[in-house]
Length: 283
Image 1 (cartoon, one colour):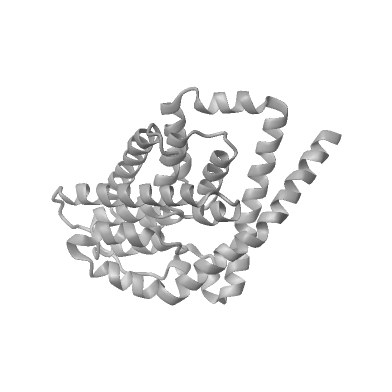
Image 2 (cartoon, one colour):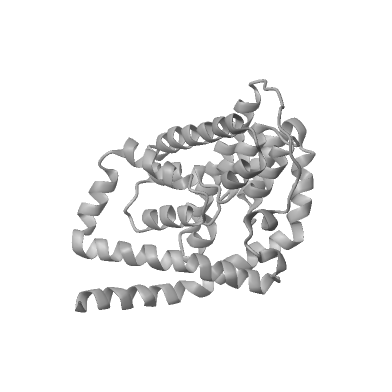
């Protein structure tokens, strides 16, 4: 019991140190969202055949929910599947604010963003080379109305605080669980288990990444930073992690077969490319 109390206090102290940085990261994201959100959507709608490149580039920017907004554009037939996938694969979801708040090296952050940008654009252009008939019907809804997060009524500061507390709770729980596991299982055994079957860990990580919730990218990023997840598995999970994007896609686009095909391409691309890139000596 004394050991558990020590772990909890240590975790709480570390969490208290990163909380201000997490708030600042979300504050920046909210400022960008309020200043450029609608302009970004208009830009992506007019991107034409260059959609995947533009979608991947805009997806990398720290905008809260851009992938979900793009799902509505796709459901309305305003962008291609390639552009949608480019955004899904490149968007950082909660990865970026967590890395910043945890004090990750700038080199690691830039490499992750570069990988997501290149993979997103590459997969997007490849998918758009395959001719498909547009049978989608729909109309554009506001992201916050769709996800019922209530943040459309918040100002920048209040929205930033809301996101900070919500994601902060996930970080605290994940970190606490990891610290307990490290204490009782052992760091070496935990790392060995996570990397013993690289392909399996990539498959599982990507499945976690598909969960339409901000917790997915929180868990994957924290596991990697704690050394409990290899680079390939981490990339596989983060590439497919698009936050509410997948959920909004299934809600807005009534063509289930089309949605399942998009989901399959996203998952396979994340697992295969994440695993391959993870083998390179860059992480």
